[in-house]
Image 1 (cartoon, rainbow, N blue to C red):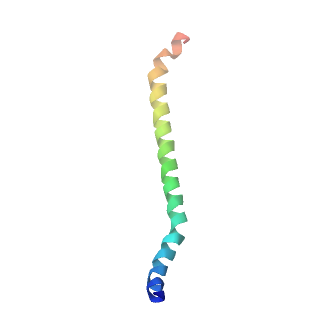
Image 2: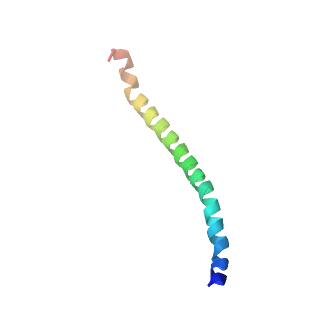
Image 3: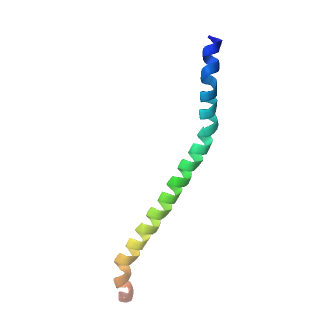
Length: 57
């Protein structure tokens, strides 16, 4: 039984050690995607209302 656990331990240890790095990469990708989406959304908003700028509304 102990021999079986010794064979799977390196795989579990590697997964456990790489999990924080994978989470950090995932958060970085999500953050960049959110920033790009917000800038794109703001650009569209200002493009839409640009013609009403002179009206005083």
